[in-house]
Image (cartoon, rainbow, N blue to C red; front, side, top):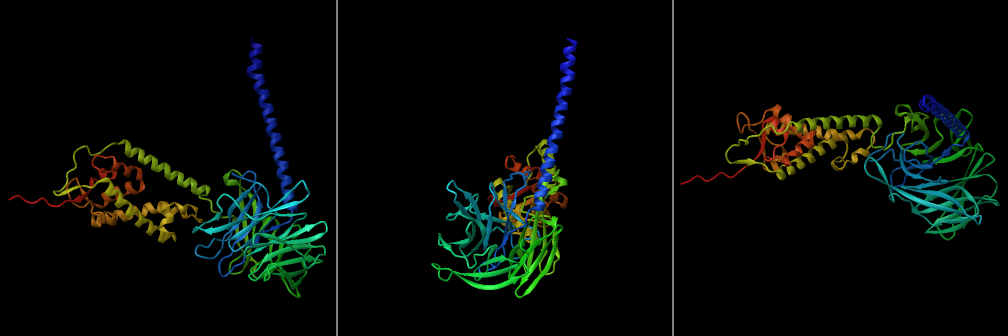
Length: 535
């Protein structure tokens, strides 16, 4: 029996613990190899460049888009993410480095194209017949003030499918027209989507090389890179039934492995070596001009951004050590006019709260809960009837509620002026989506409401809401009917604005008085018509 007990209670747990520890070490080693392989792949992979929409007179703002690989450890992760770079100018300009996640995909798109506020995403799907089906989907961004939403909500707008024997080489879009350049076994070909129908199109150059495409205000431009020379053509759509190519400039000195892109009116190339990435502006009849240099580790995905001049935004995943190694997106935004780095660090995004802000808000809620609990457990402080001046009565809960709503709207307008936000955005909690700590407008709303209420009642005996609803605040201790002192006004407004659940108890109180009224020895009354004197 003793031997069985020792084996069962001592030896077996030790064996299980050893096996569990060994499995844990193997798992860690496996994840380490996966991370190492991922790093090697990322380092060797070619930089991916997104697209910047043209600034047009109709939409005087520049949107940029890029598809990046999602991080497997991120909450709600998919296989890839469509990243939106909102305009840096306008009524609510986004700060440098700021991005938003527009969509998460369970498969990786092969290309994106953009025009004004619309982005087109291209997916490839192989079939048993050997053909490739190009599924093109679109999303449109719309402004909600400090953040952007995307239509259709929770889905993508389907465009006609293109069945082809090739793979996507380049895509561009302009005013509802989509150009797709395809790489096939016999060479290159193109197709144009216009008025919900695909049309095959011959390319102006069929020699080997690489193709790029982008949109301008005037037309769609296709560029063919071969032998360090980049030839440009404009696609004329004046005759939609027979689009034609018009020859443009020829640019020299472009590396074979460079990624060519456009931003504003410039054409640039992004090339890489073992330690850095170089951005060069391409000029006709002149060698390229290097305008910016970034460390190779600055990012894997790049997107051109146009503000008052061309910029380039680099994105990469990193580990946030302050959040236990949780993945975070880092961005580097550099000016292509001066080469100056305008932002470098964690990418500001439209997340509701950061980790630090969430902790602060949680502590505020805990403090509020404790205060509410203490005050509620103390019970009613006034058990006797409330003495009132002659020809007055206690204000009812509905009248007090209407007055409070009026005061709340006034406080929201004051707060909005200080935070450059609309009162409706604060009252509907939309301000939580605004970047840059704008969520602090919510606690500021209640602080301003309490301050305005305190001084209004101390100086005049009523707030604007109480004045409009025919109410006033008086003393019911000491000199009954007199004006409440500053400390009393401060106490009742602090409980009313900072502890709304406590103030809401006035609705079930037999005298319609909340705990702030009881502590301050105050009451909210309405004046009655004087009783007529007897004969």
